[in-house]
Image 1 (spheres, rainbow, N blue to C red):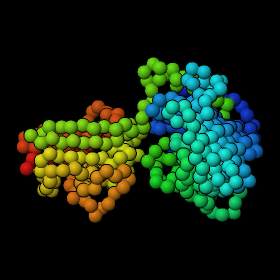
Image 2: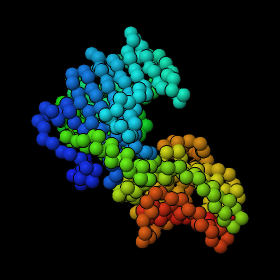
Image 3: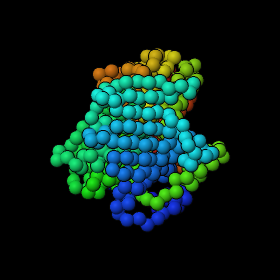
Image 4: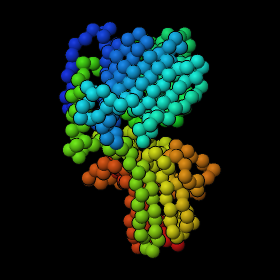
Length: 388
């Protein structure tokens, strides 16, 4: 499992470390979530029998403060859950406003969700024993799932996690006495180092679409952390979205080329050969599939591409790669149907001196046609084309 320089991160964000016993650390701890070398989230939680409280500072796209109070039942799942938002100025010391609440009622789960006008919408859904909340980019509910898994003799369990009013199945597997995995239904598998009780020591999601890592610590000052990141937002330096959406149009020798794609950020990470594996199909961006539209027929390395809209995938290699032009459109970037390929063309690879932080697609004009460039970090993948 990849190790992160947590000590440097703690210094940078002003953590206050304290000495606690092993028992205290098991039940009163914190997680630091990193995306590359940037701190994405900090969560402090306390477990007391079937009562769990948590405070979360989440920085994307801007800093938010959220507290959770969960009471579990005999199945290890939600009996009651209250989710409250806190104002950046008053922090967690303020009372907060209830955003959502969940309560088991017989064989149902009563859900109350705050709407934009301040009223609450009530929903009833079927209660599934053992169900826990799923909170994107937040990991304390995973620890409860691992704690529950450790009490069983099974090598793996199907853990239900609830998002909104719908639950999904996450597969928790025991790999060794100190390691487990949890499989997100669409994003991939996370490796987890655990102690004998299933408490998370380190979680590595670098092989999933989120590409983040999580480490356990203790003795943090959550209010000071919240204040620091809130001040960063106010100073015009928010964390921003994990992968912003880009739409651009290029004029190339009379043809209009439109591209739309998600733009993940480098954030100090190794890119090609790192978070983007060589020899494996890549969505060529993030989130929604990368879309490419041409107003005229073009020819790309012997492949005729009729005017219209397509999606682009790629297979990067250290010495080149392949660009895939697919006729399916409108899909998520994880959805790929090979039978819909229009064709594949080779990519050239080169290096540049400066580094591009956010993944970028460029279309540049050349005599009789143009060149499509995939740019990230110091690496440029490119392919020439002609206007028909």
